[in-house]
Length: 274
Image 1 (cartoon, rainbow, N blue to C red):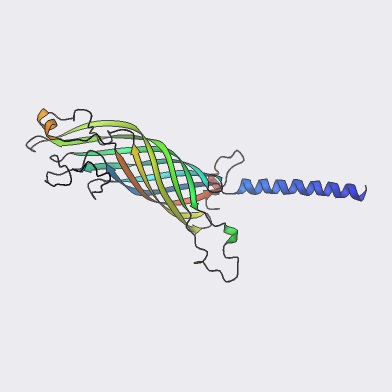
Image 2: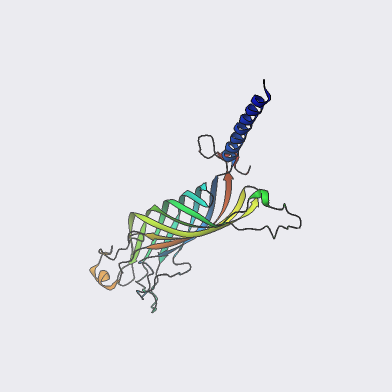
């Protein structure tokens, strides 16, 4: 065989090997992330709504606070761009007292308690990019502090909110307490920001804050456009409900695990922490 033929065959084999190696490297890259953690919620709706109709955000600790457990599965599309699916389960509630204050409506101790589930799909943009592992600690004189990065991202998405709970109220004299069960479903629009820090090679500690806008007004069982669930018209006349669009926020702390994908592009859970 001539030398030129051998050179051509060698060049073709080299190109094939390079292409195969690049494909394998891409396939082995940890593109999936699994996040799981716990957090708190803050509800903003009719129950505990402010007296000032221009006030859009309010936090009443121990009166509008709930808790949650979350799970998020992310996929790195390319570079800084991710898509994710999320599931949040938890408890949400708010309660008012008989106190008379100028900033908030207090309607003889009305309250709601509800369990909820939220399913969502999100797009994420990583505005502080994660430093590649191979570039860390390689240069002479570099320290852990110099190489420290906190990958951070913005997210936006849509989802559905499912809840089942009870709405509570007192009679006009405050002597007897009533309750009514209710269920609700509403679409939600979600916006937020998150960040994480590396603990191990493929393990991170993260935190996330998100705002949810509910396309509806029945998360707390009270709706300004319909008659309040009471046994007396007198109470209906005394209560003042605005036509709010209910809102709530999540603050969560979670652990994140990177995973590689299978050949069918599905997440390979066996590769967590590898």
